[in-house]
Image 1 (cartoon, helix red, strand yellow):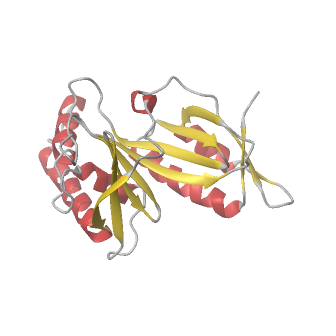
Image 2 (tube, one colour; image 1 turned 90 degrees about the vertical axis):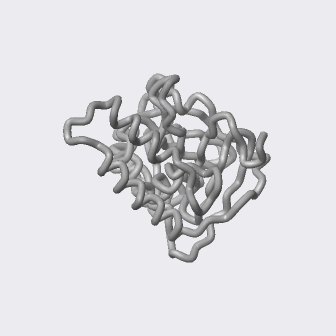
Image 3 (cartoon, helix red, strand yellow; image 1 turned 135 degrees about the vertical axis):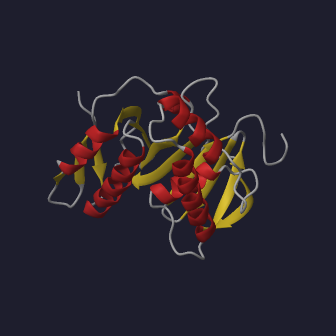
Length: 224
């Protein structure tokens, strides 16, 4: 039986459509949906390693949307299919929006472990303008480093090197977090201060428009 999501209104539908459309342009693959307690957590991958020797950081985007209280599931589905379902959503007379959830796909590597929902500790702050500047500089660096006929292995190596570099504005936060925030439309006014949190091996940047989560490898902001 097909699952159905119930959004509160067409504003929530438009917001989710915009987010997923941006994510689809970054990585045309899958999205993880975790529903429960009246909230839908929508995780998308911006960067993730392709194998054990790939040093690309795992960088995820997260938006949350209100849904019906009785809906609870955890599923990984194709982004493109979900975007198509959003376009075919049905609006009830009471204003709520019904969306069919696509069939699940085999779990992708980055979706194997969800970031924690609690235990976050504030460790830093960074401005929206600093993230935007880091993202722009990284995009230029990647473009300049790649030859015209670069194969997948070279592209992954260059992206891992550029987006794995720590940000000047936030120590130990990889530049890939800035790329994710920019690509997913999470950055607002230049002066917006975005708090940085840590929980275990995860770092989270929480802007007003969405969250960026980074799974670190072997080190911690506190040296753990």
